[in-house]
Structures are given as structure tokens and as C-alpha cells.
Amino acid sequence: MASKVLLVDDDTELVEMMADYLGREGFEVETAHDGEQGLIRALSGEFSIAVLDVMMPQMSGIEVLNQIRKRSRMPVLMLTARGDDIDRIVGLEQGADDYVPKPCTAREISARIRAILRRSGGLEENTSQPVNAGGLSMWPEQRRAEWQGQPLELTSTEFNLLEVLARNAGRTVSKAELSEQGLGRPLQKFDRSIEVHLSKIREKLGLLADGRSSIQTIFRQGYQFIKA
Image 1: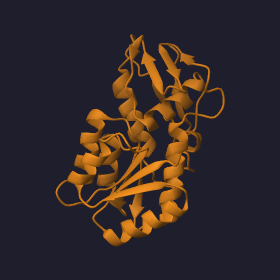
Image 2: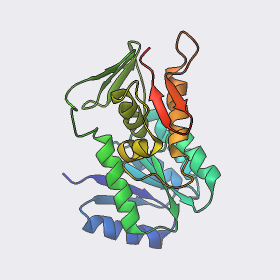
Image 3: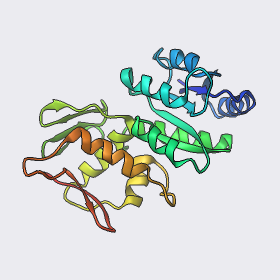
């Protein structure tokens, strides 16, 4: 079955163009032109992913994202104004899986959607076996995780990044590797997405008994998951 995409943006011309392109790329597409209607459709459970513009009438994309995250882990791609780092960081902190700065092309949107959906299906290798690292257990096929025996609620992108670190527990993983394997795209200059996502993961994991975080930043090298 074709993946179903929800496009929510008040720019009708852009939405029409994107919907047409995505349709030709094999996606099933539905559109909404304001935040309130977009939220209603996003919570219907019918869609594989939502693409939300930040600036919309009735309800902003950030508000829509916030409401979605209260009830769903559906992947969300945000469209932000180019150069507006605040919107991007806030979106990621609220649980967005990734963002694309506008103006953008339909081809770029399609590629980013495919990357997110591919990653939300788990890593291709060894997905049938659980990943265990210290107090962390992950079941990629079910997209399920437990931390110290308790369910761990993660967004799709948080799951991907944590899985990469857990599979390489005890080894430093570079930011470039995390971007390629966790976000499904090459690392971009000045991109802070990984830092924001890891900050949210650290918050959910809490501290170890010795007061350290399970995810350590290794200066100028990358990140390491500690099997404590």
C-alpha cells in the first residue's frame, strides 16, 4: 500500500505543486490549509507522516505538532522559514522528526519524507533481534523500547538515534554517522537537529546512579552510549 501523506500549509499553490509531485512519486496525499483542520486529520490515524508549515492561520504548525505529540508518535516533518533557527529548534524540541527550510522543492520534500519513513521502519539489518545495552532494551520491528524495565516513549527520530548509539554502545559514534544512520541524510553545516534530539532523549532517560548521563558527548568526536 502507498504511504499516506498529510500536507498542512496555507500556501495553496505550494501544496498543490507538492501534492501533484508526491502523487506521481507513489504517495497517497491529502491536504489541509489551516492548523485546526490539519490537526483533526492528523489525529485520524490514517496517515504515515504529516508535513506541517510553521506559519499557518487558526493554529500554528508548532501548536499542531504539540497536540499531535500528546496523542501520537506519527512522524512529522516541519517546513520552516529559511534562516529561522528558533522555529527549527522549537519544532525539534516539541518532537518534530526533521525540518526543511522554505523555499524548498517538491523533490526535496519527497526525499526527506522517504528518509523519515525508511528510518521509522527501523534499521534494515538485524531488526528481528532486540538491541540490549545496559538498562536499555529496544525492539526495532515493534518500534518499542524499555529503559530499566519501564516503557520508554520516543518519537520516531529519537528511536532511530538511540538505536544507532545502543548498537554501538561503548564506542564513539560521530555526528556524521548519526545523521546518516539516524536521520537518513548527510550531516548539514550548522545543523543542530541531533543535539536537540539527544537532549530530549537524555531528559527521558534521566541520570545514572553515579550522576552521569547514559549518552556522553565526546569532545570533537561524537557521542557514546554508556552500558552502565
